[in-house]
Amino acid sequence: MTTATPPSVGSLLAAAAAALRASGSPTPRLDAELLIAHATGRERAWVLAHPESEISADAVEVLRNGFERRATGEPIAYIRGFKEWLSLRIRTDARALVPRPETEVLAAAAMAEIAGRLDRDGEPVVAWEVATGSGAVAVALALRFREALEAGPLTLIASDASADALALAAENVADHGVERLLRLVAADLLAPAGVTLPRPDVVVANLPYLSTAEVEAAAGSLAHEPRVALEGGPEGLELLRRLFSELPDRAAAGATVLLEVALGQAAAVAGLSPLGAAVEALPDLGGVPRVVVVRLPS
Image 1 (cartoon, rainbow, N blue to C red):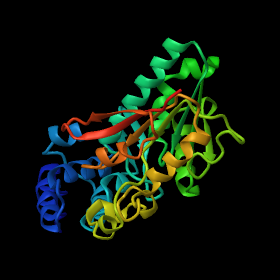
Image 2: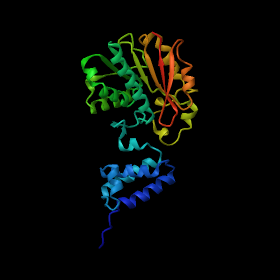
Image 3: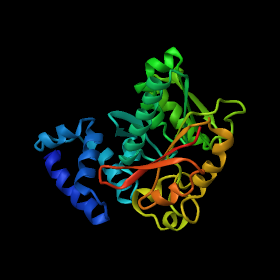
Image 4: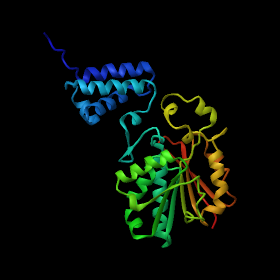
């Protein structure tokens, strides 16, 4: 009686990449590497460095399940349960969007704005992330400004209208040990500001900005992510318009608003800005205007 030889990392990698390519994955080789790393409990670098290593039957079963899910277009981050983002390990599942590289531009811009205000004004600063989703940006801000948050010059609020997203954000906040540094709030945009919560000096938001038609035609990963976090109405601007309409009553005088926007959307978003506001657009690594910065008049 003979026993089948366990498959090697290299053979599974080649077979998996071919199968994922046939299923329509835009990144079949990378997907295969990440799924094998997930199944074996290793890092991707180990997978690349050990093609001759054998994979256990249990790992093969985990791998098979992962391949089947990815073949339907489900995001790798949902299958693995986390996403490496801005040097952080962020929990991910279908309760919220997967953090994108583009949103790192938003986080960096928010950090620069908050740091500038803390250094320049000598006044307390209230920063508020609207539609926090997984909480990735809020966690990054809390870690960056831990000292200011503990000492009191900075207050950080993160809100979302989705109870599911807020629950995921709370898990990520707890994972990174920043529960006491920020406040998570169930809210529709800035509704509690100036009522039960302070008016923000810095507003950070990655609101749904895809049009209804784009969401309905979505395939691959987008088809598996929560529609409420993607759809921004017929033009993709519905939530952005609503936020701008709230700013006069809800934001502090002279507040800065930082918004992630879609490809080709920066000019339209700038056009929504209140009279007298100063507006600039910041590019992502591909040179695409990705973050619109709106500085409200004092």
